[in-house]
Image 1 (cartoon, rainbow, N blue to C red):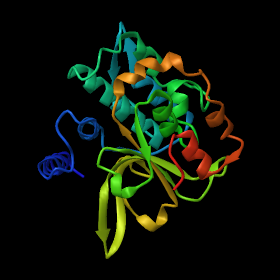
Image 2 (cartoon, rainbow, N blue to C red; image 1 turned 135 degrees about the vertical axis):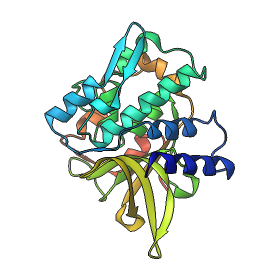
Image 3 (cartoon, rainbow, N blue to C red; image 1 turned 60 degrees about the vertical axis):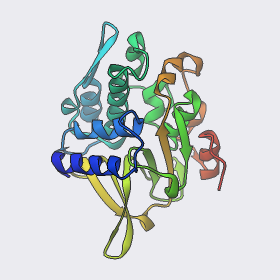
Image 4 (tube, helix red, strand yellow; image 1 turned 180 degrees about the horizontal axis):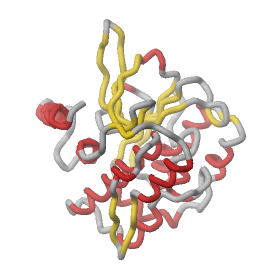
Length: 254
């Protein structure tokens, strides 16, 4: 979707009451998507990881975020940049206290799954939703009826969590019908194009966990959680269940 088209979509959602107000953090998430590059290719190579690391540079209690450097990209990296840019925007708008030295702990690094903030976000399974639950950044849930544009969404393409899973981390944009079939539209880094929007048939999604950013200032409490999340770290080599993924995300199993 072109930039001007996305602006019209965001304005229409605000006017239609689909989003609460300009101070709504879902609005901030969507605003950051408008500033992201288009395309750039998709890859999960060492070079793509290094490019992501170079795109976020903390300095003297602030941070420089340059997503154009993170090309090619991949889904967890793309959504993490949107997450960081949303924190930065909330900070600049006075919606949360300045993060200062916290930015240094938020920069993506070559961390193993489950280690640190980036290592949690990038992990298999419910990485982002586990982080949201640990730091009480916002609510996790599974109902499409409750979902709103700007929610983060972990898609499980098959009914597996952990070593054998096939998943995708995205920003939810809404539901639509295409050729009479329900579809889910989202933004992320998608194969093979890279940064951009995509729409997939809802029947292709086996499981889903939504995460809504509601209390971004709680990211300051990162020292209160263990450096390593043992559950997320285990998912590199072990299988879990969706029920356990929900429990670890603070969601009651449906």
